[in-house]
Amino acid sequence: MAGFPKVKTLEMFDFSSSSVDRNIINELSTLRFIENAQNVLLIGPSGVGKTHLVIALGYLATQARIKTKFITAQDLLLQLEIAQQTNRLQHYFKRL
Image (tube, rainbow, N blue to C red; front, side):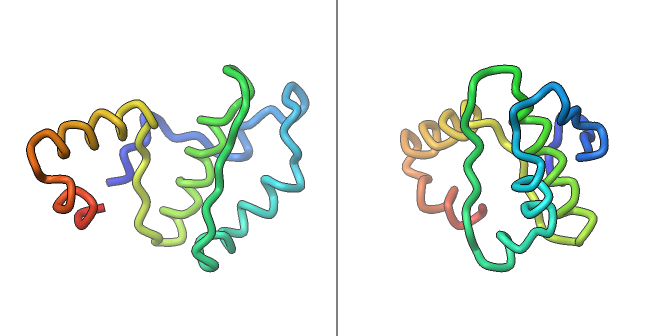
């Protein structure tokens, strides 16, 4: 299970009220970055649509039958801290 809080699609994203470059998102939507084992990092202030876009790209990946996991940075850091405190950090990385 991908763990999306709700389904968001690229069609639902309002590019007209965002400074996000639609061409870059269109390229990301090809999912070639996954095939090429490349990382994507979305950086910006609150409210520009980073979470929406990440969920939409993740949803595309699930539709392509690519194993996908959504987790917020805050939750990831919390899980890593707990895993380290319980000496299970290596186990945590193996299950990702």
